[in-house]
Image (cartoon, rainbow, N blue to C red):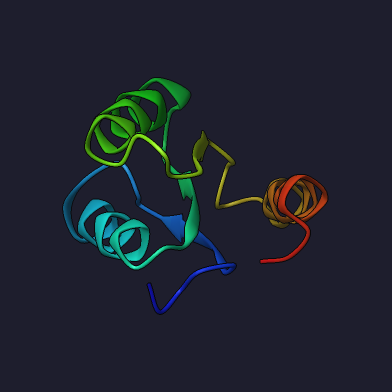
Length: 85
């Protein structure tokens, strides 16, 4: 549990390398916020990870990563909810 009490936002977290990274971070005790291109894909990924790690803190968001304002808002919301990123 090397990442206990750490929070990570992972872009592309609903599939591929991003999903694998989220899985590894959760395994190591981190709380994870998945950023995906759609809320639906984020929710599917979150459900899969919660099934594997039922006690983990994992959430999904879908900010527009092409918009700096959207990215700032996502980080602000994650920071308010989890205390740090």
